[in-house]
Amino acid sequence: MLVLFAEDERDLAQLTIDFLEIEGIDCDYADNGEMAINLINAHQYDVIVLDISMPRLDGFSVCKMIKANGNNTPVIFLTARDALADKLAGFSLGADDYLTKPFDLPELAARIKVLAQRSTKICNIFNLDTLSIYFEQHKVIRGNREILLSPSQWQLLKILADHSPNVVSRVVLENVIWPDQMASKDMLKMLVFRLRSLIDINNEQVLIHTIRGAGIALRVLNEK
Image (cartoon, rainbow, N blue to C red; front, top):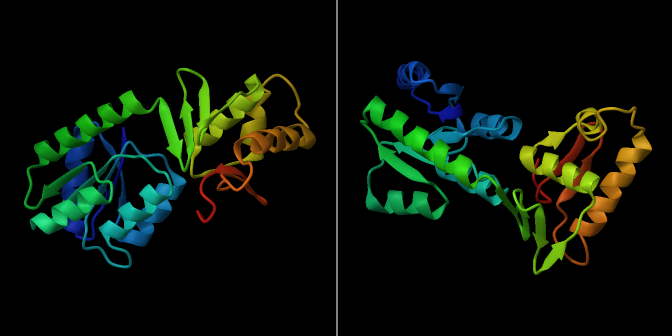
């Protein structure tokens, strides 16, 4: 299990991370909101723990940004702000839990494990904008229309969804989709084109993006 722990109080962060690792929970650490966003964009976490009063970008803003980008990773606010208005604001932004300081380390570990387990149970559905992917049923819906995909198109979409909103390199895509043959650039280019022509049509938000020099990403238009 991998958790992002975003907290600007370094001593508290070190103590908490040391305890969580004893509990089998590995942690990446950010001491400000901008660093948290960068780490979230670069890695797939099971749970994100956010302080609210962080420098550069506060926890509320971080949560709002990642939820707007379609990131469904469970979020726990861990903060000294115990007013009801703050708690309601946190949940309205998409947080899954809210724990106030001071807190008991075993309780935090337990809450993280519960959220991670719950997330694992529902991860068979991916939602982004008006796109819904039902992994177990191999079913794709955009708006009110169901999209039928070929096996290779399905595989490409699944890889992009698994890594969304991050970019997946062409090399990774080619090796996964065509493991037993040397895929040409045109093969992947055509596959992406055909998938995009099915997913992004008419005036719908563009979700499949070619990032020059990096690869392909499934995300909303203005994500970075």
